[in-house]
Length: 262
Image 1: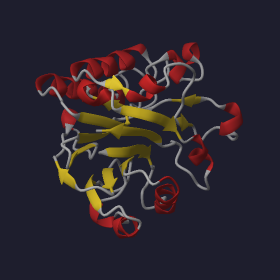
Image 2: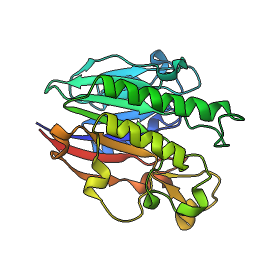
Image 3: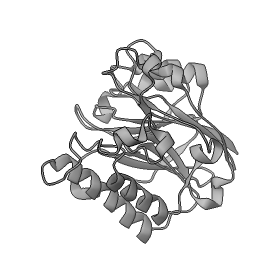
């Protein structure tokens, strides 16, 4: 069984339903994982996605904030969700394919502007969320699983446009990178994107604040595709569809793709 998966922070699935449909029509991933849907599940435009062939849905929603959804051409079984750090946020959902592969879709908290939990509660929540992920994967070692989503951390020096300039900027601080590395090690996760594209600058997010994001190219790789070691070798054809960031009224994220032959 071969399937192509994409992960995309859509920044409002209702506002950008047309862009989701455009990606579905143009790229046809078998599975599309969305984050920051900003909608209760019952108000997500799922009928329109079903008309395009994505009739299988496992999602968790929240009015105006957060929200994660797995849209699929392939049958899915709902595998539940976890509320790490007890935030009461819709930030995780899991689903299982018929071949037994479990897909975890995450939206890790952004963490606010100041990388100091003593003055910024949101940064503390981010670190606590990551610690919860670490502990869960340590106690429940995943097998035959894929983890995707907006993890809101660019871990490598070449995952940001300027490593030194961003060392004190939330999403690339050493403490965040260490926490993300702990999550990765706890589940023995393999970074599929960097397995396929081991060298060079690679970004999936460009700020709305940049009037010409493409020319400035001050990006960060915040969106990830990981897999457990037992299926990591089956992952290939990773890519980030940068052009999507330039679509009309876009999300500030671009979708990340990978294909698995299992």
